[in-house]
Image 1: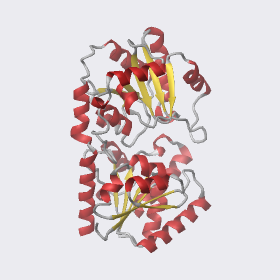
Image 2: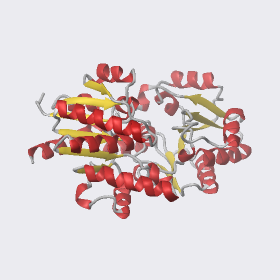
Image 3: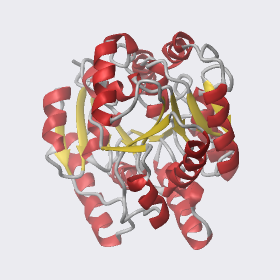
Image 4: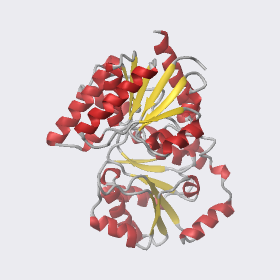
Length: 384
């Protein structure tokens, strides 16, 4: 292990555990890696699983000036004590607070990965405020990594920072996908049938799946409206919905929530710890999100050989190539989303080859490739 120290900062501990899974332990082979996020028992799990030190410093996902100032001070104090060569932040609030503290502490390499921008759906004064915060974040950074080409173009268009600070690692994604773990060959026909039986899904059903937070920004209203119409026209179709709501941050419409819980062909799976068996029984994923950085679930579905219907947003429209490993529809368009689902149901079952869907992910987003490229980036920065 090098004596060079790298601190990775996220707003919540689950991001260290899930979004950066495996990456921290990989980098810990070469550096002294520390994970920082809000205090949470999950941090102990990160230490155990990844083999890295962790530190809890509370950060909120909302605008909370006094708590934010306290967090900056605590981060600054921690950075001054640890003297890292690199502070690398993820998620919006951790980026702003972490990079400001790193700048004040004199950290030479201050890096930020952009993985989706909430401001894309904001308007008016809120949008102006979020734009300003984003510019402050990037001003504190020495390097900024949009995790998709679409985000890179958006940041340049909005003039949040100078182009020389921006770089997309590989073909995008913050952490790639573990293609050995997400492999359809790991699940037998018996296992798949048992799961269908437990969900009350008949053998001849076409299974659609949505995985993600049950919030407005994920396109849940368009999905439910399109599916209700589809279910009225096709008898043998089921929608599995895996995820949890965020009623305080982004509550969905009461009508949509009612349909999710009462429609006979919608199966609410709640939070799914291991999505692979659910993907293994699915025929197509539907992911009509309004905004993303580089959606992990779309890569995971592809690695499991499942085609994906996505909205035409950055990240999603880079992973999916229409007609090859899925289909791209305009964002917030229920009618065309419904048509895409209908076209899939009526299409020749061989149109979307499971093998091709998987190989398109393996070739571009195997996480070992992403880790290697990021390691090379770190090395180039540390040599300067």
